[in-house]
Amino acid sequence: MRPRAKHRPQAGRRRPSPAAPPAEPVPLAITRLGAQGDGIARLPDGAPVFLPDALPGERITARLTARRGDGWTAEQLTREADSPERAPPPCPQFGVCGGCTVQHLADTAYAAWKRGLLMETLARAGFADAPVAALQRTPAGRRRRADLAIARAGDDVRIGFNRRGARSVAHIAGCLVLDPCILALTDPLRMALAGTPWPQRAGSAVVNLTDTGADLLLEAEAAPDAGARERLIAFARGAGLARLSWRPARARGADAPEPIIQFRAPRMRFGDVVVPVPPGAFLQASPEGEAAILAAVLAALEPLGKRGGKARIADLFAGLGTLSFPLARLGRVLAMEGDGPAIEALGAAARKADMAGRISAERRDLAARPLAGNELAGLDAVVLDPPFAGAEAQCRALAGSRVPLIVYVSCNPAALARDARLLAGGGYHLAGATPIDQFLWSGHLETVAVFQR
Ligand SMILES: C[S@@+](CC[C@H](N)C(=O)[O-])C[C@H]1O[C@@H](n2cnc3c(N)ncnc32)[C@H](O)[C@@H]1O
Image (cartoon, rainbow, N blue to C red; front, side):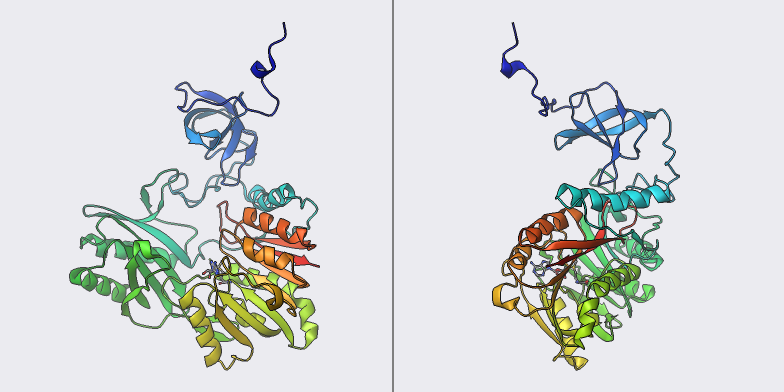
């Protein structure tokens, strides 16, 4: 008798795996390197297994540790033989620190994997034929913006990145990604905090290396008392900070940070214009990353050069004007940004530079109220550089527009692919994409994508 259909395994559907990991080790064959940098293998029931520090082609005996989506995370027990593409990780903290996940891959293979992240994501979204440029590389040791975790247990204060696969903080004894000027702040800050009860348990330190020095914003549950402020001011003076501020941890984007001490006003130059930098403001991760993004954006807008400085461009998610000021050489720029202090700084810098006629700055939540309809009519180009979540509402509005050129700067290939589908639905063609590796040795990737109609 044939088994009844409901008892037959169905093609493409996995049997549900148990919730608790089996105790006995499992043999695994790694078939690919995932977007987070984990080697991925499959169990006989089809469930994926994610293994840190594992490469395609390697055969590994592992212990499953926890559920992840419809699969498992696992830890390696033994590895039969190394992949020929395995290389010694350059950082001694690799595997402990959660910052870099792919340092164990030879450089050529690493660059191919990084570019492949974009190609695969675009292909899955229906853009298999999109021209993807070679990966633009940026140097190590140049990250000028960092968001570091602070954890305290008594007098033991740690400042660093979250441990890989854990919630605890690994003190950064060294880091190949960060600018050494950021690294040099961590020990003095740790010692300053160890001498006070602030922050009580946890906090964070957002550092921006600006043109006038380091701007440090500390976040904690409660305000520092007078004693903590005194120690922090001594630390800031000794470390040569431009400014030190604090704000309540839960108030990101809500309460204004309170400066504790300012020795110099933090400033950045974008194009020919000097912009004041509010505490915790967004900067592109490295100067070279910023230069590569700007070069790709300007190359895409090159046809507007023929307009003799009369082009009309919208720069959406403009931040402090990293792109707006250089774009103003091509014509009039409408800069829009949701963060109040950032767009005020942009507008103030434009007025001070006598550019108010070329750049107009407007605060706007582009998720709730995207630029749409008549506002888009007459624009020669829209440049948008949204946060990690992408710009779904804005791309829906753009899809219905007649704007001939859209340049989309993305830090998240998945959001870019989703938004590209919206634009394609409105008749736009993905003319090309340039991947830029400004988040070294991680699964994060910057891309400049060009859409035309
Ligand atoms: C990736 S940054 C880009 C900033 C700028 N283009 C640059 O290159 O420095 C994204 C910007 O989007 C802003 N943003 C986030 N959500 C927003 C929203 N809903 N509406 C408008 N701006 C938003 C952030 O404040 C941030 O400045």
